[in-house]
Length: 264
Image (cartoon, rainbow, N blue to C red; front, top):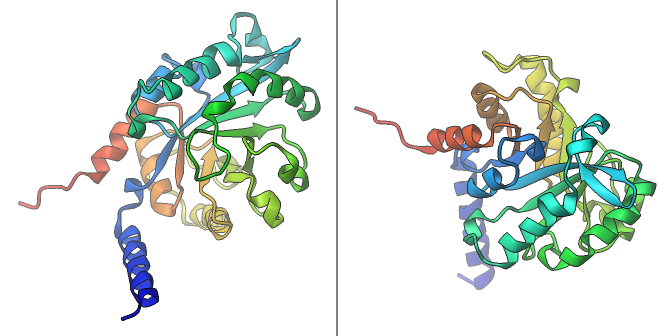
């Protein structure tokens, strides 16, 4: 048997094994609006959460983390609340690799044109902790919210990536800058997270999931029910990243689903 055949068989075995694993054994967690949590950043870091989200508003020459403009008065800056402590964690080796987050998502609440120049200045001192390649070392710096036209994604620096949208026909060079596909769950379903997700809603959601996977990207739904039943059913549908405000409970529940049950 030649080397090419051996390689092919090995790849087939890996793919088969991945397909046999429960969906919830592979799902990752996104700490939605992390700054609103009781312990912003540190809870997600302590639980080994994959992705952390911070919404930012432009305030003079700085970026402030808040959910709405009404909360800007007592809000902290992006640098103070996330970039500086993350740099200390990631570059100071205070966390083992398995607990290091994979992505910092920054959601632009103000216009791209006004926010981006300030954003570049704010992140400049922290570039060493961000990836230059999607599968390279470091943390992904992903922009969501108000973004530039998708046809221009390829023009931006190699440390900047984007949150994508479903059914967009990205050109290959722009698709390389998209790290995942995200959509509003409520556009496809009014399900409240109790009982069974309606069959028609499953079909609508599956179309979005399949579109993302055809692009080779993981998928996330925001505005989805934040319940155990929802986490389980979304994972089983093929959702790769669970969007949650309950990171500790979500992590604990998904881990519990992976434990073998007694068959006595």
